[in-house]
Image (cartoon, rainbow, N blue to C red; front, side):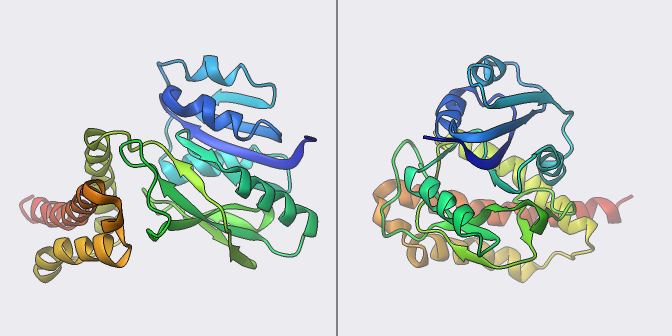
Length: 254
């Protein structure tokens, strides 16, 4: 297969467990830019096995900041963002090639298929979707977002038919640890934006998020894994609100 005229950019920190599969899935792309924030595992050794990969160090600037710096290093008009625990599907690769060739739209909104505890979701479970492939000149990050950063696209987008596979949630421990870290960042982001905590939201956010995850997004189709996943998602939503209360209380006690 000839090279795909698209730059892939990835930010990493100790992603050795999945990175080889990630890089194999984009080995036909023109270049892969990895911005690493201090890995101590075999991330560098894996990256150096691939001819199209350039890896460099950058002290952590936050999720949006780090990805913005990686994006700036890309030389192609089209770019694709992956995390170091994600794999591009063959179907999505073909869609990307078609979009580049047709040159009519500016971005694809891509479904993310979370492989929770090593098992793919049911094909009927509703997936989250984000812009991951886009025309470089049309996309940027909002640096105010501390986590769950999204590409803002000034142009025409459409939803992709195929997935990016996300393998990072390999255990309940890992998912809970991530949610604890992310809820810290989201609470700080809300606090900095002047959001005030709400007791009503604190009370209802956990059951409502569970209902959304388990029933509306159809996680119940994933058996006991879907139930556990929905419970953890609900607790994450609760933690964000609880930590906003905590920050407000600490401010008032100073």
